[in-house]
Length: 270
Image 1: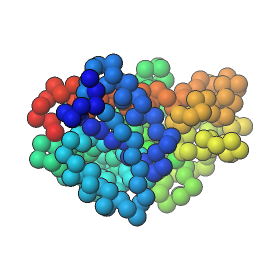
Image 2: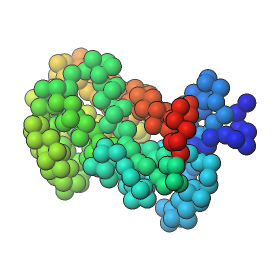
Image 3: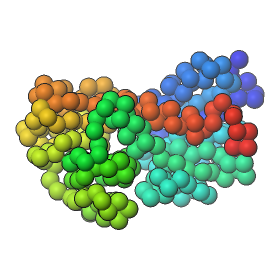
């Protein structure tokens, strides 16, 4: 039976939260496994965040949380410790309660992204990659692409200074990868990635110059809804290999499940 007084409770925090897919996915897993666990979508206004987070921390039976926009960086500062993946971008998408009641942070954006590419046999090592978007998810992706052996990454972002800062940090961490900031032009690239929300809404422009796409390229979009964005549809019509956003989430959920220890294999963990 689920939802008893002994239930492990998890939350999914975003503002707004109505688009979130994680609560449904996790609750389905809990149901399939017969776990007395729940994941609840929650939201709060940014001006109320400190009060809200104090309440979450004080709620003893909340074992973990998935974090989305706009709180990924804010919650990083609330954590007592973090995995290197989260620390290097100072941004989280998952936190779990430690045995002493403090929070431990991790970031699975890049993990899910790389695992999804590998599962679909998209080559990363030695490749030249255009990445549009250097925000929270984009930062995690850039580090993980460099770590996975990308030969070259061209970053572009509407905030050029943000892209420059990220490029500098990634280059320092992974000097074997050539990384610079340039225009949203996929010419000469093996892979082009949209790591922005552009494409979620009807009438959005393309995130990069799609007239330069050629059939030997792979086009990746991290947007999950629509499942096939206009960018991916056009890329497919031009003969490109494509990768939609849902597999990234599926692999993140797998990694998060282990992070949260949903089966309670380690009773000392929170």
